[in-house]
Image (cartoon, rainbow, N blue to C red; front, side):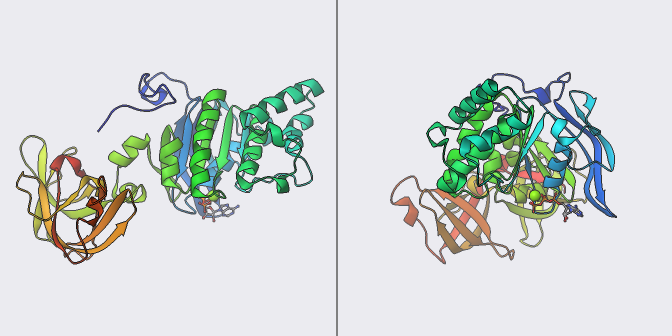
Length: 384
Ligand SMILES: Nc1ncnc2c1ncn2[C@@H]1O[C@H](COP(=O)(O)OP(=O)(O)OP(=O)(O)O)[C@@H](O)[C@H]1O
Ligand SMILES: [Mg+2]
């Protein structure tokens, strides 16, 4: 696994703050819980978010992402725990007095106001001098590249442009922390991609700390410095995109972020930090690197990503892990193909291969008997 951690365009050159012992977080949650009646929406969450981070919250619907954002914005008060901004308790501070802004999923632009009036709305309410407002609005319009559309109303611009107006409006007051709840949910895939890159660029130029909620794991991987995976109101893992994908802490995280194949069984320790997992349903054994100390007789999950496996007609002879099967289905995606292969376990394995040559996409077809193989070091042994 690579240790290079990307953090802005200077990726990999500096030690990120979350790896420094003495780095001071911008935001800190200490054992925060939020209950509605006897339902716990947020359960004992402790978390540090650093200045200039692009922090993503990811998790299934109802896991508490928006609730966590609302706690940060001040629309909700924690039932328990503390929320600190630069070391100071912000729980008693009203939402509009916090240096925090939230951009809602439905951008909630004022339909009767022009683009520039929408952007200046919060500034006028702050009673900022007129020339300063004008200057800030110009700056924001150029930041989101909407200067030419400044006099249009929301219904006269596209969905992507509306998204940018909402972003400009929420950045106009120069918050220290911007919370974005599903900011790209209404955009199509291609526009989303472009908007993600724009967002990264804008965030980097302003140096504002962003916390984003998204349903889309690819989006989180693309934009975030770190990702918090949540489930049932708890933080399951907080890590960089690379760590989250390559070293998930549990089967749940592995399955939630990207596709994966999982073998289940008992494991025995071998020499050189390796172990052997025996999958009793398949009556097959596979080698894997050991992670920590094995518990004798404990059940383990061997996790291998589809792109780390290979399909071949012949059984490999190089000592890789391998298993034979029959092709059930092929999903052809142009640049790559995913093969769904029945190995007799009930759940087909998925193996992804790039179509690096025009003819490789026709390598195999349905019902072909094939071998699946992977290098032992590419497997990850998990105990939960
Ligand atoms: N005001 C409220 N009163 C009671 N329950 C609430 C309230 N707000 C949220 N909840 C519950 O808390 C849980 C978490 O809600 P939240 O909106 O944070 O989920 P989410 O992770 O943002 O989901 P989604 O991805 O669907 O937006 C849900 O089960 C929700 O029903
Ligand atoms: Mg939500």
